[in-house]
Image (cartoon, rainbow, N blue to C red; front, top):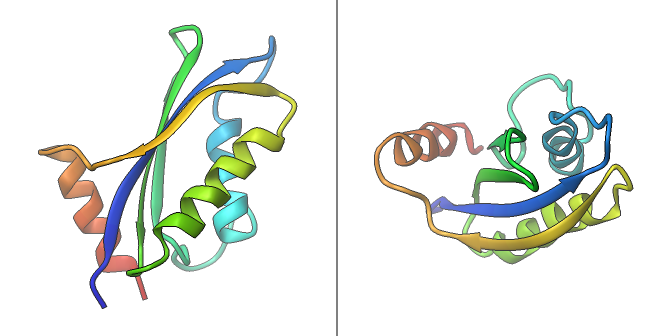
Length: 113
């Protein structure tokens, strides 16, 4: 089994008063069942958001088993699009960056069971 690491980039227009951590929480709920869960994630991931800019820029690094990329990217997109606390301006999948992001993906890959 070769892990497949990729990123989901989303631009989100957060409604006034929305906690900027909420989109990452919704992604974790989608992938893990709850944002506070025991054990490792079924699909290890890390989400960061820059809400100091408008619209906010969210990037999720996720590691999946071979052949799961499309399903997981679709699940992340669906989680972001169904929440009424923000609107998705743009969303796309992409490659993992070099340096720290590559190291993060490698750490996440070690958690994939």
